Length: 338
Image 1 (spheres, helix red, strand yellow):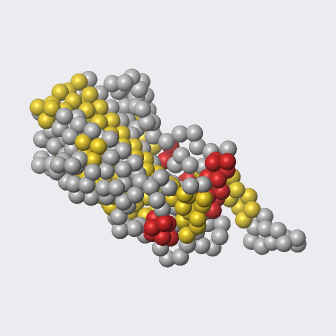
Image 2 (cartoon, rainbow, N blue to C red):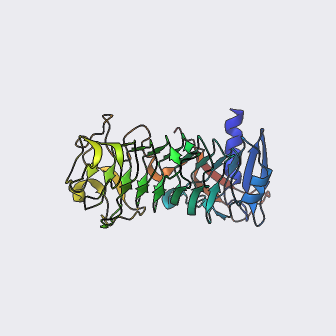
Image 3 (cartoon, rainbow, N blue to C red):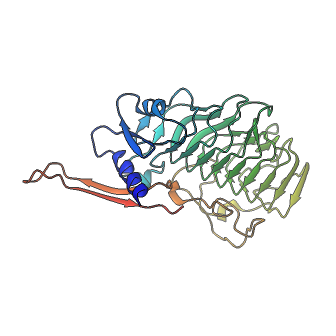
């Protein structure tokens, strides 16, 4: 109970109740506030492995690289659920380096790329409920990143898994292609890639992997270009898909996308007005018996990508104190169960 109360107080402190929003560092039961021009950098510099950083609903500049085992929470990125706090936005590219095993990022928008640095081994990372421009694991598998999970995110460009092995990419909305990687589980994603290129596939050079329960928007059949020894199971394809040197099991081909989703503009881009719930959840089942797409599988998409830390849904602050010098503040905080 004490830990929950401390977390609530930290979350409230990061909202825009005051003129200047604060980055909060929680370390060994003590919370420290940072403001000024570079509060995220200052909080990071003071953090040690195992600490938690809470980002407020504003834009912050990241440190040159994250090289510590931290948990970093934001307020979320959907406009409709961050009215009370604004969105947490990291402006620029975020670099993750080799001492950041077990790092967790949640509820954050990153305007640039999320880069796992070249041939640096970062294991057990969890990236969830974030909006990312691009994800890139740089390297050649000589020292691969392992057991990483990217889930319930919106990725507005591509995912490059060059230095990823035995990792999970699940329940995401991905606007472009997925390339490279070995022993990757690509599960329950909605992939909006619309390229008609005959050179680059939507899934390229992803070997010895399981690609299951995904929905592929692409209209032509260059889906698994150059993949080898991977299994494509229970995926939804807009057209006919070519198996190549891979195993194809129980896929759904030539599916009419006009009626597949509750609401989707079929333009191959993400916007917040789209609704990726399936119209017929019993028609397209995955290899685990749940529906294909982002609302099936082990990590069903959380509507509005609300982060798991307590969420401020509304706040009201009186413009001035009353006759007793008291300032009337009303805050509604919803606990998250998942």
